[in-house]
Length: 327
Image (tube, rainbow, N blue to C red; front, side, top):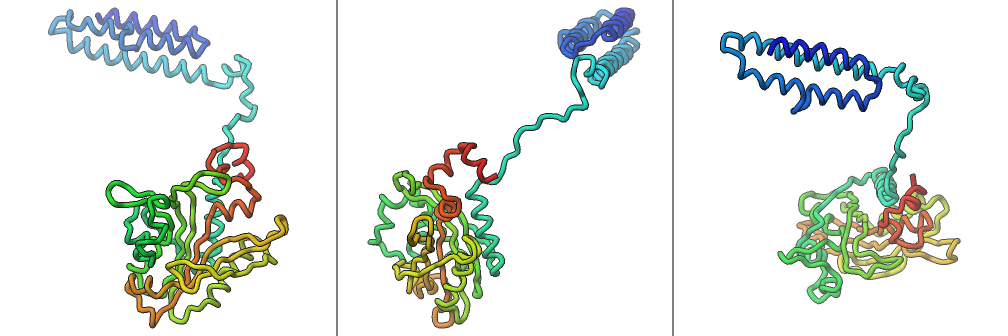
């Protein structure tokens, strides 16, 4: 058996030295070192060796296996060197080819830009669960039981009594419960509503809510903040206006519009207002001492207005021809 191992070693050395093709080298390596290769076949004869000679045979088996591995490792290094590549017609001095680099999704870019603006105004970023309770999604926000938003046609209810949040205002409630004024946060995230999908609606979209609570906060602070935001996001000279509106969780409430020269009219951007005293009380904040404002921005709407996108569905179709415009 020892003699057979030595012959196998010599045979492998001779055969490996004549190989010039990497594919053929791998075949030869398997021929010798594969599970059913020549080395395994010879080693299987260890049972035929006498008890006296087995230690020596075992040592030889280990030595030959290491030698075979060295032989084929050296052959692989030789075939992968510059000389072999040049011989095969490969110019190793040419630059390599690389897969195209990805980029941030346009919605992610918009969220980051808006977040950066508000961080510059002293806001921190808060997050919360997408699966919520009715309390955080409705009751704590002063939304009564008979409000249309609580209907099954306007909210995704789950079997365990939970629901998919329909607004990121839920994060504001959680922050107010855990923190004491002054509170200054924004809460970007996904929300869900059972809307029919078309050019301007989707059953899943993104919102960014803002909340500022402190002593003496007024509507003037709200207008100044949102004016600064609009000028920063859409550019200097952006014209804005506020219109009276209604939201259960703010009083008074207002919609904010910006003027579009392209469309020749006012476009709604966001909803806002002073935090309703009932909402403050629910969160354990005394409305006699503190006031605050809140606002909610639709991220997709902002992206569509900023980049001139006409169909919200383009953000979700993963068409690289569309996405490359924002890389």
